[in-house]
Image (cartoon, rainbow, N blue to C red; front, side):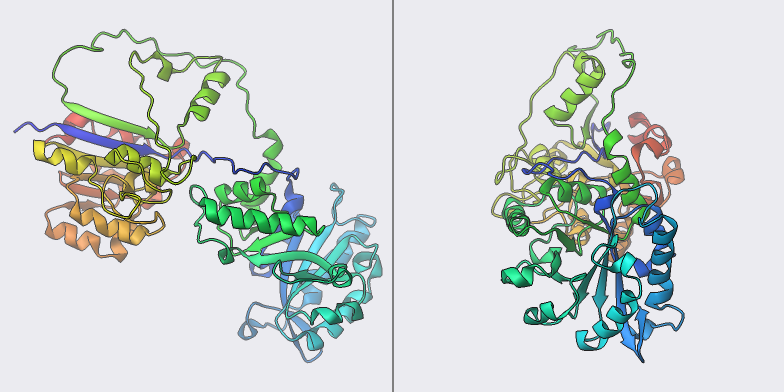
Length: 487
């Protein structure tokens, strides 16, 4: 029997939706914080090379010396605070004539996390830094902020004014105590389980925004640790007004922040549009294949931005039939990929982050299941991970898009006969691949195998799932829909 095909091809475009609050800071590497900097390949120098405004080091006091390490078991004699940070900073400030960076007007916040008690660590630290008042003193370019095992708040005034402390938003400080607080920090998971994809749910976003505004009313700057570490997270934190962006990816964040001023693009000449002949458009001939091509982030704002950038013309606008689909989430005006894709796949709106379930968490049948009764074969192809929200909504039923292992397991209960994309590790960890083989699926792990696979098959190649402009063209051209339809 010559079966019809239904294909869903989500394409990753990484469009970031702005949060409700607009940026109040002109962001640059001055707002970048090198989290656990000492664990970088080259401590201090990598963050210094990216002109970061904040660097963090954990220290242990042992035998009158300060060592840099995350755990006491990792203490190495050569990795002292003096060798890794104090000497390089002093040398740079002196060579730059009183400035940390030769070509930047801002100084450096140095966050020092005490792993041993303050009564042991602070006397040694104060003695070491007091030797260089022109660098670490009240008028020096390096602002020293102590975190971790800080002394009680009523003892803050017993320490030099140039030594400040890392506060917490839930602590009620007196005005005198607050004068000794140089920064306020908190763990991001204290407010949200957000994984850095899509949007933070409204309830959690409101809590975070309230904390940020509280800290700013106190005249202090705020940093969150344990945040997701990707562009979407960085942009979200910037939109919310976070003062220091926490990262372990020094080079990536540095480049991102340096390019913010040039992130807006204007093409000098418009792209030449394809002129269709409309030869078969609206004809009553039998439709053999239906392809739903989803550009992630393709809202009206993004489409209109493209129209504007291309002088009012897009190939998309050449289509004779254009519809309007409202896929807003059931619980908020601004949707994320999970709720949007669920609306497309099932015809029903749901809450943000929900995959293939209604607002009460009940499973909803998606298109592949709905068309199976007409002997239509379905396939899913993603330019990203097949367990990401958009493709997952066409086969999975989970309350939150972060449950990627459970999403992978859900594929076993769906009729999709062709699956292509990334996300292999989730399928392997859940032993989904073994079960699929038992069900008669052919398995591939490299796109080069595409020509040899016959349906039903699963092809998951994480190494080739990269930025769209770098993705091998064979993902889209190696097999036509006609070839894919062969038994």
